[in-house]
Length: 391
Image 1 (tube, one colour):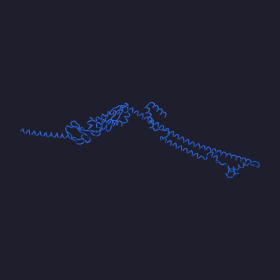
Image 2 (cartoon, one colour):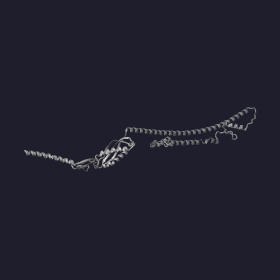
Image 3 (cartoon, rainbow, N blue to C red):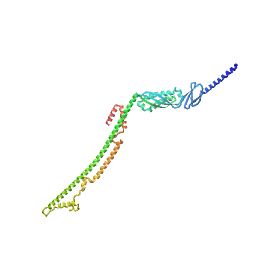
Image 4 (spheres, rainbow, N blue to C red):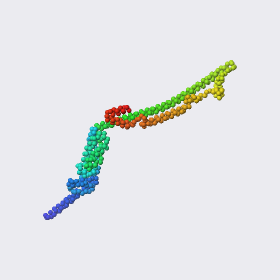
């Protein structure tokens, strides 16, 4: 009976040993096989000694005495915590950034630095504070690309020794203190008000010049019209005067004829039968008959009333033959002046007039230059102000 019991115990022991051996084999195979992903590399150490880098795929390593350390070979993002800094002009600011890195040499990253991510993050923090401290407040707000480039240059040298490449640095935001922000808002508001006042003054000046040009054009046209009217009125007065003189002469001659006829009538009523008539009286009688009957009978080439037509000398004196020419010259001069004035008005409208109205942006730039010169020295400010007043 005793051997049977021993046999049974021996069979159970063998089974247990076989199971243990099988488990040991499985564990050994598991320890020997190392699967590396396609986007990483792993550093292999045996008994604490660095051996090699394991490439992506299946790798066999010594079991139980080896360890591997994975390194992601893709571009990685490190968030730099918000940092406080004092700018060169003693203005407090806060800033944060993002750093993009990539492991270029996994062996250096394993042997040269303890934790490359933490090391790069800490180095980026100190570099960010140093770069902001070397710049003016306005530069920190406006020259974002320059800040990024400076931080990247500062990180390149030490990270190269660690097998890390800094691909990019991006400062996300730079915020001054609350008091500085309020002061900047007031400065911006004042600058905008100044620009608005300059633009308004330029607009009023241009409007005044255009109004003056319009009044000038209107006055010239009105003066040309008055000149033409006066010439025509003077010509009319001269013609009217000559016509009145001719009419008065004709009426005087008719009165003489009628007086002579009354005298003849009185003579005819007398008792005498003999009459002596002067030659002038017979001429008057003939002319009177021509005047009453409209006949063409003439006495010795005389006897007709003088025509009311002007002789050549009178027409030349009055300028009757030159009226059309004078009016044509007046119209031509007025037309030329109007066209010229229209061109001037268009020039004023487009800002090309002789008044030298400057563009508002040019005026603002000049004032900014004068203001910048004034900050450089008290004398320059005084000169700029006096020049500005003189203008």
